[in-house]
Image 1 (cartoon, rainbow, N blue to C red):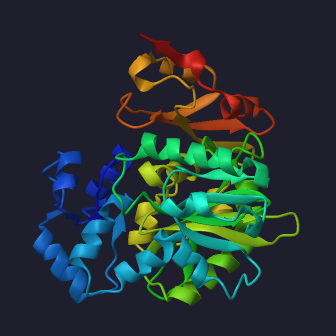
Image 2 (image 1 turned 90 degrees about the vertical axis):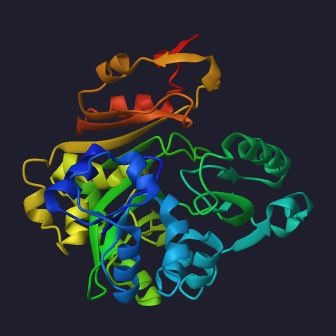
Image 3 (image 1 turned 180 degrees about the vertical axis):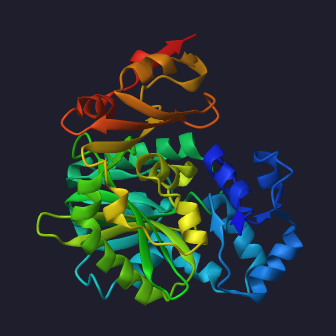
Length: 390
């Protein structure tokens, strides 16, 4: 069963639903986003009855905006509790505390941030909303002298981003302060099957422009990225599954792996793969893996076959976030044609209406390994070269 919520559903996911005749819950939001009446729409009352009667019934959501629907209608099942484990970053750290006993983290209310004794903190650190999304409100603090400056930025962030997402997705009432995890960052889509086994569907390297960068601009995947990290990631998701006893449950997890091979999870997003139908879709464009079908049909990737003919390619997901410093109200348009000309092989462009969200869109690309300069350039770009002002 599919539960659709705002802000976005891709044509690829809709096509997958249609071709497989997957049941689709007929919520108001889903109907606003999808106009195809020929799909296998299921009335909400019927969906609730199926999901409460069969606690392990397969359900995939494209968006965490649906969490409120699950909490309201499936309160007699384990799903709200399972979601809480992951969506609340403080609860997630508590869950894994015995695996990482020396890992520093601290929960704090927003109104108490100004009264924290800085000398009691361990630097460098990361501060972010305990319930968050898309690196919104996330900051790295290297030294105590930066603390007050970062608090000012957080207050400005809140003014800018409040109202974009419901509180179940982004809630700035509580923050988590935690150790800055060293190493390379990766994003993983996986699911727990009907036996509780963790099945990995994608591993993407989250690339940063600097030590201070906390943006989501570039994620890349390739044969080397997947195969070199598959074992260590598998061990972690197996451990999480043992802790939570998950079955028939999809997750999107972000981790860091240091030079010694130590892996530490950053966060886990429940009930879905990457937000805005990103990582779930790019698996198809990169490797021919339909992540939605794999989960709902209980399939496992054959990586040896999947990588044939793609050994020298890197596939990237590029978030065109507005880091230009130019306000949405001052922008007339975005030159997408000029953007596409800067890439070797664009696979898919998704445009977002300017001002609706603080992003211009998403781009999927194929890059020949050894020719990644285009990725380096977009990683550090402020996008002003593509922006046409009023």
